[in-house]
Amino acid sequence: MFWKTVAITLLATPCWADCPVGADLADGIQITIDDGTVELYRAQSPERVETMTTYPDGFVVRTITANGIYVTEVADMINGKVDLEARTTYRFPMKAADMPAPAPGSTWQVNTSGDDGYDTFSDSIAVSWGSETNITYADCAYRMIPGTLRYSTDDYSEVIHYLPELGFAVLASYSEGAGGRPEVLRVTGIAKAGG
Image (tube, rainbow, N blue to C red):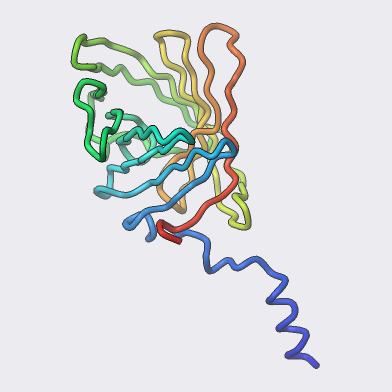
């Protein structure tokens, strides 16, 4: 009777073994947003994460982030290749290894520069991290540190959810313009790439 009870309990329990872990970032971790958008995160190096975002209409955007957090490149994709006419790069004054790691309650500010192939520009990003908590995507629970990134240009800001156990941040919402209403992105699923 004991083992029968254990078996029934196990069948009724979420299959935690299927939840992605940090090591899975090498092959890719896929996140699904409520509008059908799919984000595939993959480590290119210990300090560089590539995200391939496929929108419901099939449009694909490639983003490279330093430490899985700070955007260093974003480009449209055409037939699996980067569209060099729709590519923007962002430069930071330090290497990714020297950027402050997310820590609850911490803040920092950094001046950046960029190039979209037509013009160069400069910006300043104010970063603030909130208290660590837990977040659940489908049946998978993770530690999460919420962060707010405020850009000096265009009154643009983002709220991101940094997942220390996975090694990257997920965009949770963004807003444009003074007093702009946030656009919220809700995660409905997470899985290992190809899972």
